[in-house]
Image 1 (cartoon, rainbow, N blue to C red):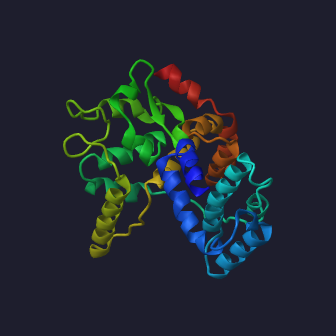
Image 2: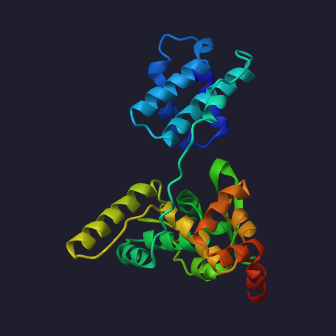
Image 3: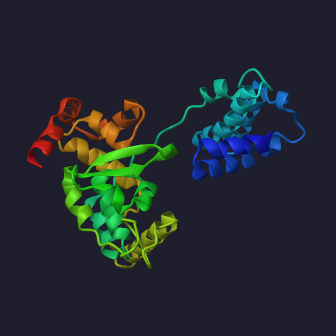
Length: 287
């Protein structure tokens, strides 16, 4: 069954999600030894939740791992091997605390940009101007830059295509000024025009260097993840008077509820403007 599910998984999700699912299943493997598919019921799922919480595993991790198990259950239902998914009712009962987003400060970003090698700094600036994810930028090609409409097409989560307006924050001027490597298609590259196949370790090493320098020189510095630049872009977008609904599409959020988390970082007056803003129209009129 797992082999058949694995084949289906490769067709329906990206490689990163597939890898994450497999890692999650390894965490849950001790509960499945010697059990038949029919033995995986609500009582067993509840036991998994209790035991993992007792060991200090966060609810977010528990929900992520159970999501992988739920995928198997859904596959089994499609094959008519079982009738119901015992995971879903329990998932809804596991509360997930969302820690406040720590937005990178201008000072911390500047310290990192000063020490960023190659086009790493350009990737950081691009994230601030577009809100694009790390993987989206790493794969972006020059052919996906629309000079007529001043837009960039990216491939987001689950291979969804998203078009980002580059007029706000002078994004188009930034992207057109990026140096190209002759014969290579990528907007952001290293060495001989190759894309950043694994950008996360490169960014983490940069954070380590900046953190070490700051400590040695008595400079205050708070490290941040690359994804935090996306959050910073979102808040900057709303604080500039632009509306939250265009931000939803810009970030590729399926639900406006996800985008609304950024309202917490605005004043009451800014919240009103975010819901009824007109800056997007102004951007286009002045372009």
